[in-house]
Length: 316
Length: 312
Image 1 (cartoon, helix red, strand yellow):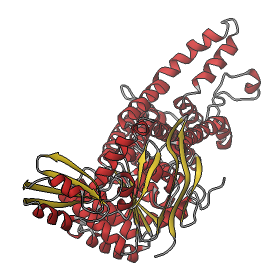
Image 2 (cartoon, rainbow over the protein chains, first blue to last red):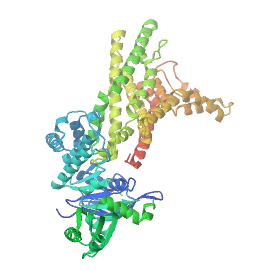
Image 3 (cartoon, chains in turn orange, brown):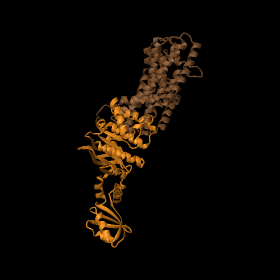
Image 4 (cartoon, one colour):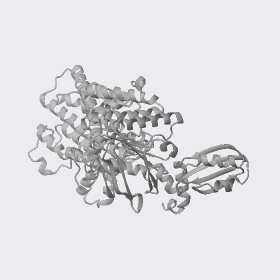
């Protein structure tokens, strides 16, 4: 579980004078789920296509297990499983036949191919429909069939482009569970998405794309500290009591107290001050109605970041 | 910068898959029936005609292919018209179809190069066309044997086989054209319309337009130049090339496909058939022309495909 799987250094894609991706630098460690996040058109898919050798790299370099996707695309494509954005299959063929075709392209021979396909379909829960035509499949089933292809390939790293877009909540929860189970199996995963909270639940680290640049990178907690000013946010709802705000502000480790609504307080503090806040409210003879700790969410980080740096947003 | 690994890895897999797709597709079924029925009608007409008017003809069997009986055109003119339709029908959505089904990036993320995909599709299309044409050819020859009751001679069979080969090459030109447009246009409907438009233009309009253009280019006093120019222009159309090839191969008395010069008539017995090899020589430039056209068109499609972005 050590070593770097994907390495990108100053990866750049130019179309004429416009930059689709502007010197993106990141790396994905073995066994890690890494998320490329950002709005549509921020350069996530282009980055992925460059890593796969399907799009030419204008500048910079990319390495996948030490292979250059421009010069050794076959070696790269043997090691990487790719699930494109809204993946398509041959509708006139059955699920198993679709996998047989790609299996042949992967040069798996007869018996082994059959075994792996059966296993992979079992894994993603499509065993019952293995011989049904893909034309009858829902979007979620196609997406899972795409994952089955990666499982069959026994790829070392899975690159998933918008795996949950367009799926209903149930289907996307199932898909994310599958992705997590891939990680347990030892896959490294690079996934791109614009659906932030979904991705937050699976990613170890994320890189935030904006207008072709990576503007933030790290674990969700790190980004939270960096963008949201760090610390914890405790929300308290109180009925009655006197001088709650000043009492809360007086607690050690509190940076600021806001009062967004009557009886509602938001405390930004260095550590988890829920217990102390509760005690303070009770001491002020207030009735504590609610007490919660705000986890830094990607959604918050994202909105906050672009509020703070609006010029970046319009740079494109 | 050189890429590593063979460009042909996966070629066989792609070819076989495309071949089986074509062979079971409803589109193919329709095209086959269209070609078989019209061709049989033409041959039947030819047989009636031959029976009615035949004189001593050393190449009676070849008349099967070339004789027309009103109101039907001959077998070869049918092929000249319908083979392109079949090739276009097989090729017009070969690449953009993968785009619109969103399968292209998934297939290309497997360890193959784009070369294998495009070449495999071309080979499969050509394979299907060859199979159909061979069947058609056997059907016609069999029908001729049964209904004429005259066995063909060795040279006749050789000429008929060469004709078959030339027809496959002709089909290859149109297949390559259809694939070029299927790479260029993202929408299959646009590609089909443009290719069919090219087909109508090159087979129907261009042959009659060529003399007019020649008249505009060359002064009318110089009659020989005028004729040659018109012919050269007309030969830009693969349909013209195919027609000339067929004429030289199936009609052994054809001595030249251009204007006849006096020097060519020296010692010639009018109407005497040429030996097989000489007939091939007469048609050689046309054959090479068609092979070159299909290679050029394929390369055009290949280069465009290599530079194309994969994403939809």
